[in-house]
Amino acid sequence: QVQLAESGGGLVQAGGSLRLSCVASGSAASINTMYWYRQASGKQRELVAGIGSGGDTSYADSVQGRFTISRDNAKNTVDLDMNNLKPDDTAVYYCKAGTITTSYKYLEVWGQGTLVTVSS
Image 1: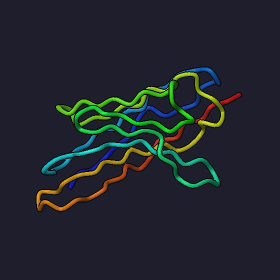
Image 2 (image 1 turned 90 degrees about the vertical axis):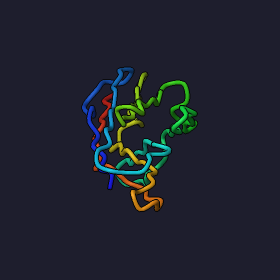
Image 3 (image 1 turned 60 degrees about the horizontal axis):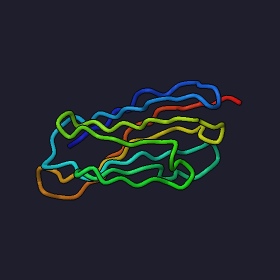
Image 4 (image 1 turned 135 degrees about the vertical axis):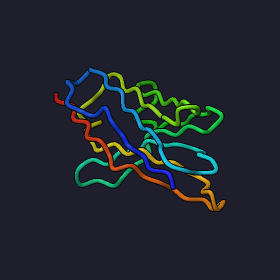
């Protein structure tokens, strides 16, 4: 089974930038679409961005033009470059992967999250 580990969170001033990284380890037949979600305090978890194995991307309207998702299939990593950060971007950011297990079953895997705090 695949495990995900995020890194790169921290405290940044509004207008600043951060790069989040997520690395997948373990065994799987394949790792399909990878995602970044976020959950602010008291709010529901929301989808921020996704990237397919072929590199096709999608973004939430709230981050379009400010965030960029990318992946390295050889290294099993997915990154999220966040620019022009706003206080509303403050949240715990989670990595998620859609995987095909070695038993050829679809399984969604989540990381434990990394906290991003944007000060005004």
